[in-house]
Image (cartoon, rainbow, N blue to C red; front, side):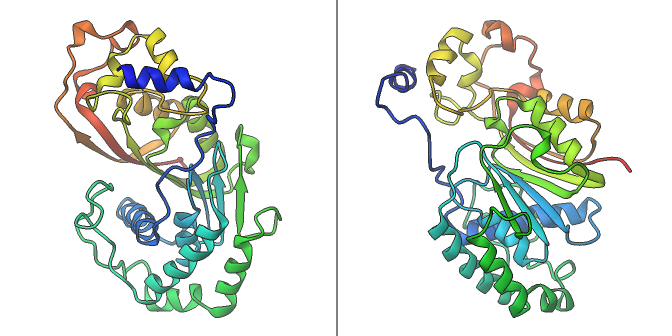
Length: 310
């Protein structure tokens, strides 16, 4: 705990950069390809009939590679929403070209052997020919269309661009209401402080019948010695650990996400939990976490997809 407290204290010192630029995530084209196709395959399994036209990503990270995969696969517009500007234009250009080759080759989805910690897990990692058939790919990979996406990578300011990069985003007005087919994120919602606002915004943005798709990592993210130790810190200790950093983790358990989904109005289509044995004693938890359920205490992550009712 001392090292975690020290990191928080250092963030208060003058001259210390606490912007937290760089997430170490989306700098691999194969990772971006894998994540997008996993969300897409699961959405198809849960009722998606066609490729979504307009998508939005919360927290794209070091590149907009997952969104570029979405565009290459046939999406018409992509919104990237982040708190801190992480995405690197050099990464974006390189990853785009590598993604193109993966789609042109109809490459299988990189699975658990290559990315053992990436979820959701799939029953099959074969390329999804049923959703991305040859007729569809002939359209989405047309040279003139690819040229427009390539141009948009360096032009995210124009309202007419394929790509809208909004940093920082704040509130539901950043995207026109009921214009999004799919909102997704990968290990991001655990970092959002105003979590209820995020779910409420997503409900505002998504079209009736549209979907959200989120992989949420509920572990301690190196803020504690154990995977669940972040729930054991009293509020005053956590405030020191958090420090002045623009984001860390919000410490909300699975039941909070489930409640916010329901309160926002979403219909849950899929809920896959990933469990680990709890290291905590419930009667010794801080007051904030005394009401955590037994399910909360063993849920280290969850993949959820939900729909806005028609």
